[in-house]
Amino acid sequence: MKWPFKRSNSSVADKVPDGGLRRYLTTDQPARNTPVDRAPLLAIDFETTGLTPGTDHVLSVGMVNVDGLRIPMGSAVNFLVNPGHEVGQSAVIHQITDDELAHG
Image (tube, rainbow, N blue to C red; front, side):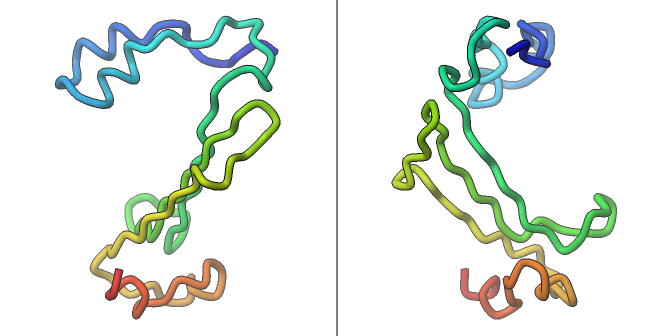
C-alpha cells in the first residue's frame, strides 16, 4: 500500500513546543510499501453536535489501537467533553445527553 502521508514532518515539528505533538511529528513514518496490517494504527472517533466547525462542538473522543488485523478491546478509551452548550437534536444520532455530559 502506498501511504498518502509525507515521510517527514520535521519542518512542522520545529514550529511546535516540546511535548506529545512534537514527538509525534518527529517519529519516523512507516515505509511507503509497508502493508497496512503491519503498521501500528490508532482509530479515532469523534461525536459532535454537527458538522460545522464554527458552530458545532465535540462531545466525545474515542480511541482504539489497531494491531495488524486485530483490535485489542482493552486498548479502547472514551472521553466525554462538556462543550458548555446543549447537545440539542444531535442526541438522536449519538445518544449522548446533556445530563451525561454534565456528570462526566
